[in-house]
Image (cartoon, rainbow, N blue to C red):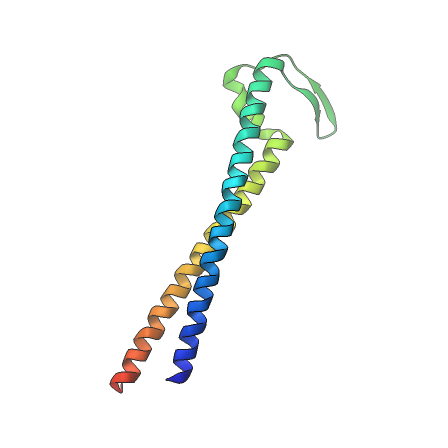
Length: 123
């Protein structure tokens, strides 16, 4: 029973650590989302009012203003915006992986609790 109790304590500590990591990761995800949306909005507005002047994959582009209906897709494909979206997606994936690990540890804790109850009953 002592081994089961020790394992239960380890799982509880792991759960505490994971919850702390989730809080940190939630802040990271929120910042990444904010940065992405701000850059996307700025780029959409810039494309519509000023057009695009710059290099994409080694090729120079210089356009006049872009129609509002096209700016959303064009803006998401520009390197600066795409990089921020990528970072946001990674942060979201880390958050989801942490959540799944939390669920797993909770299940492990439930299993160990049931095992301890069975040991106490002499089963």
